[in-house]
Length: 403
Image (cartoon, rainbow, N blue to C red; front, side, top):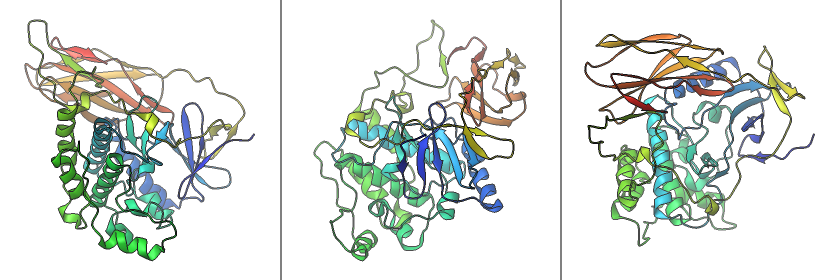
């Protein structure tokens, strides 16, 4: 069966089963590399509450030994962007990338190569960041000239990949979104050594666009500083404030879980840009990140992925969270599912801006500490190689939960 595909700097991307893609690497992984990759993915699961992180659903091996990663399909990437985005869209993308990086760094995971090709848009226009982790980057090194104009100087110099190089990548993506150009201009026919020298030594031109706030231009310049120690670590918060100022929060919220006050209470003022609906002008952004139909794939018991001529009809995965038992200072939770899943408890507390996530692995019960007198909502998230699933939320103390 013929199929279309797209090629990255190392891997080939083809369509997988359902609304997924398969990223096919050119060789197998040794035991140590596979263990390191599994550790990265397990750590990222702790940051699964951040929607801007594109998860890996499954890691497998083709019959010829090549390594594959299966992940959700997106519509487009920032690759090929050749004109500035509207300020609001650029800020939406920048804040999403910054939040994804902050969550990954808190979980102990470095991205390693934040470039336009790794910033994708879902069909809803929501920005996500793909390809977190340095394990596969070190196992399958790419051409050092690929996306050179977006790479941190220390990465070009000695292949350093850390939180500070991720911040440089964030600055480079923001620079592209705000100007339509990479931080360093590419000259057709230019010698590679000249390109490398420019990235290593020349400062990035300042953004002079008329509608760009001075604070934003200064933040991008700081992220693109040649000195890694001077790159700001609070870009997510600063971009959130800029986004709040640029776009009024009059769009419907899309939270994982919302606590609504009783009718006798006044609702709190919402200031979090995380509640904002993403509506990025996808028509400006070119470059599909996945291709069209290829055969379905089937994972066997030994981890080998082979073509499957059948289209499976899987039973829908269900998670049922039973009513919480409130013990004043803690709550007893229990749940059931018709599938084998790794679980996380998500809880929202009425005076906290962000939900909390507690990893419980395969357990189907958990005692969660709570504060007396406050209202809470709980739900259970489960994950397996086929996807992520959620229970209906359950309240205590009169909370109103919105999934």
